[in-house]
Image (tube, rainbow, N blue to C red; front, side, top):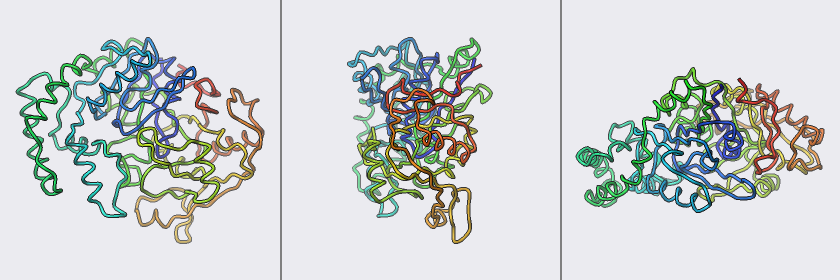
Length: 431
């Protein structure tokens, strides 16, 4: 038995969906442990494209249990819409195949309204780049002990009390932002209507997962955003509202840290970022445009164009250490096909001092310039390669140099969006 945590090791969009799906065939349980529907995973299976936001990536695989853990914040209306959409693609989703932790906080319409109003009110340079889905305000309510959780939907008196407590906080905020007060009765009616749809999926996830673990079942823990968006270790304040790193997998579902056997970091062969915030290796030239076009770099959730840049080994080495990553899955290697020369950031220059990590202070981050190492590219295609022998020599050299610089081995190598176009080096599920 081996349990595996999958985390993004950059700013997200590393290709976690495909890798989780690839691994899920060998897992018994796939559990989401943080984030909301602001992150999207695109899966391509037998030519059919599935776009998931709230549902765990393993839900498209038959015979698996998919779990939404308490570390997630859940928009129940979005979830029900997504379930219907995926069902229309021929995927069966029932309370036997999908469980939601009873203590999962719910994203309400008022959270999205607050999210968008704050972003509109923010001055230029202070905008976070939020998707406006209400993720941050919901996490705030969770920490402020005023969230409405899945279990609250089962009892009307409890639900009304929870709503009243939340509105004591939200109405003054809305007044300050020029938003109308919350229609209390309408909100309660919405929650009472969605309750019977959501509650059949509710379960004591912590208990179920611990029983599965004791029975020798393989559990795959799936995160949402990348590690550089972690609320503590990301490029603050341009981060998400939850802990994204591997340690959150345990608290995000209610299972002990000794249940984690392997941490797999998903790493793109170059670097991208959506929204605001520092990006030392960002390119504004033809190379950056070429990476974006070849990599189809548009967000699954928002459609926003991603910023593109060279691979940043200094940052990935940092996230490998913070997550305790045992091996990486290097994705989108094929996007680099045809580049005559490739650059890798190995360190930063900060006012004449060489740093092997990105400092925490925002002003220092802004002054960091990348120190590059150049490598020859390759003209041959790597798309669809399924063995090392299929790769050009310079592509192999690039991968090996990445391993050396981030001080972590490659466990998987992905060469296209197709599930089977994957080179297995180390099996994360090996006992």
